Amino acid sequence: VYDSRLALAACSRHAPDLILVDFNMPPLDGLAVVKQVKQLPNPVKIVVISMYAEKREIARFDALLVDGYIAKTVAADRLLMLLRQVMAGERVVETGNPTLPLPDNDLRASYGLTKREIEILKRVKQEMTTEQIADELCLSYFTVQTHRKNISQKLPFTTKKEFYDFLESLT
Image (cartoon, rainbow, N blue to C red):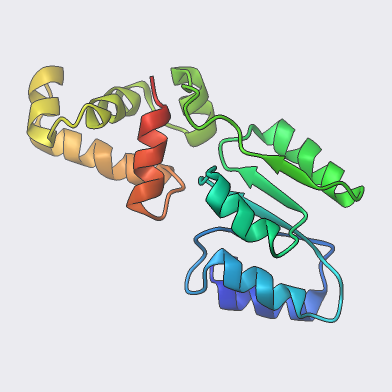
């Protein structure tokens, strides 16, 4: 569920053992969601999933005694292992390394990006305009525009900051 109000209602109804909370889950932010979940009568393990790996953000959730804080860049198998640790009673903080470059094949596997979309994404990182990218790759403006739209639909970012933080991690 990506609407925080619906997520809170679902937690009240179903009393889950574990919930994953996005830092930027509209309309309430992750902090507000965690505070409200902590008020529910049934105990629930809470793991924050976020693109933010700064100590300041982690400290804000630490103060609310969440059970885990995991970066969205963590590989799926590692995520499952960390969630198992939380369910076993451990507290986990896994920020990953936001500056670690993702190889092209990881981008394709993680986000379903095509080789062409990765080429375009890397040029966006270089602050090239759609026109410049089209000229450099010998594509039409509209083709590049369509690729950019497809990229934004495939990437899980809801804010420009998340997107630009992600761009910084690319090689």
